[in-house]
Length: 247
Image (cartoon, rainbow, N blue to C red):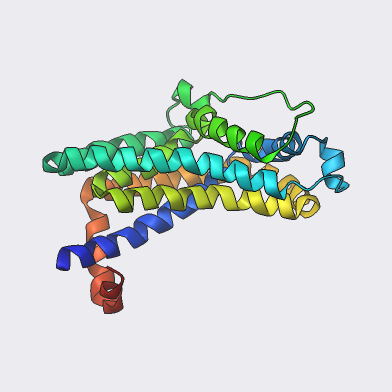
């Protein structure tokens, strides 16, 4: 029973990190600038037509998010299954994952550069056909095509999923990450004019956001190396005994 309670408490800080990583992924320099063209492509109108409300982007955006969430959930399940298969070596896996996450954080901080993480798959944003199915397929392609770009954030969450070794919690972590990345897409589609204005104001801060992401990666990497997540889990259980009811 205590193990279940501890696993529940361990999920909370990891879920917070996953949600924050998803939001920062949306704000990353290779995602934020292409949001309006993507929304325009999915609805089959230009950006100006989108702003003039010639066609709503909400339904295509919803199916787009479902598409990328499908891929992330499969990744989370696979990472958890891997961690469970090598349960006896989980401490070593956590340390190896910590080193990898720290290296990716250093990449974001421009201390070192990893060329593959600078690659991104772009598409031509001409006149699209629109439609829910097309948006869903585009979401699948986005999740795969932008993996190098959002790889550090995604790799960090996959590492957390693998280190847990539980299929349900690992899959849930990737679901939370997908929410962090997907909800801003939906909000941008609903409030398109306001969203474009906000995005234009955020663009000068993209490099700062990238460094914040790098710092977060390093912190999580150190926590994986030192086992600090377990310590936080114990602290949460002692401080908030009601968490045991969530197990």
